[in-house]
Length: 329
Image 1 (spheres, helix red, strand yellow):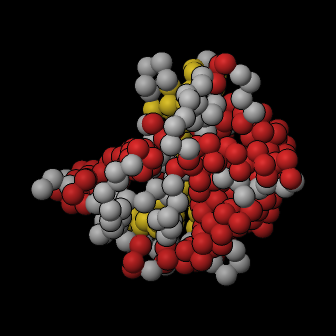
Image 2 (cartoon, helix red, strand yellow; image 1 turned 135 degrees about the vertical axis):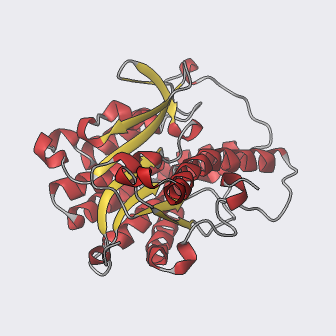
């Protein structure tokens, strides 16, 4: 491995909690850290896909400083800005926490989440302003799910569209299914959260894969209320595909040690994982756009970024995606 590692960064999704991933990317791309590694690829799902795509577009068009500007502007535009918006935000989170709720199909009304997301992406991602040659920066992979046949869908940066990116974040029932390339899609968390194994096939293969994990792996107490059970179910589901993705990397690493012929195509890849260090956040808080929450998560992400250079981020390890989940007993 070179003194400066080639790195691919994968950003897990989680609604507003993905502001943590934006903070991590901002910390890593800041002048004090950007020279310590070479970024060769990014990936993401849902909110993590927004972060990865914004950083990628900034890097393709103007470099790290533009990536920082796009990430910051997007998340601050997403924050609650006026009294009416604050009231809507409060009631949406409060109703999500209400012990009894009525499930309403998004096809019974006109959801506003998709329209809002598209407007933000048009302003801060501005894909139409990226000429084809500007898309030849780091590789980009965006995860979504085909709801009709259950396919795991991966969209690449060189042909990325707004439909594909919105599809990655289309969690029901907040969103309707999104048509991307003729396929009806829901949020990628149902199949790939975030994409990782694609990193092994890019031309400029990484020495290390860095994963920004949003969903906590461990809870110390048994969930007993309906709301707590739903929260934990969501967390475990969000981490299941990540464990499977990391198993793929771990498996290749072990096979390389056993079969010399594979070394012509693959190389060992170290994995590092840094998790969001707040365990007090419930599922409804993923809908919360309050400035206090988003700014806290952005700052926590910036503070966490240096941990990727420390031994404590090496995977597998206790407290992260467990080795038992990806290795035979």
